[in-house]
Length: 193
Image (tube, rainbow, N blue to C red; front, side):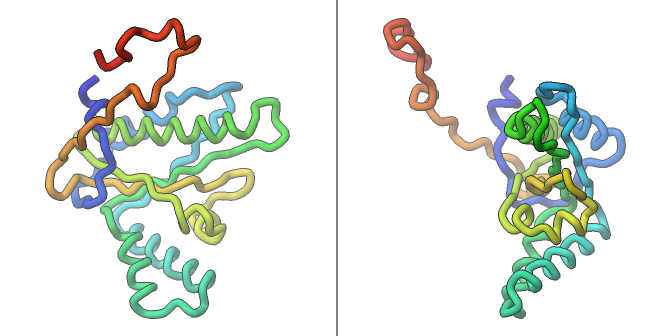
């Protein structure tokens, strides 16, 4: 339980990243997410090694197409952000419209799978950070890494080993985030006691 309670995003990531059977075990945890209807919506794309340079080139080209005024330093920042870690796991989902399982449940299954990946990375001694933004908003990036409708790109997990070791942030107090209903049945003093 302490492993789950200490997980946090790690933004400064270096080698090593998980590979081989360790990576396979981590990716398998994503397939244990809740899956109403057994639709199996998860789609992971792993980018590693020289593929990270290709991903950075794709990100720069997509940025330049989106914003023809972008030049030099701005595109260099886009490249640097795409190369912020030794590995990326793109989080995608095959989301079926007009299915008896609502789209929101399918998307939540993909998100739960991604959270399982982040927890597994941490449990194995690695770090990760989930980034969305331009990566998910630009269809050129999704298409460039092979997502085809009805598949969607929901984010990028940048993965590696935390550069300065791992420091668990302070935990927030639980009570501001939890309510009991009906209120008269709430534990006296809240949950923190």
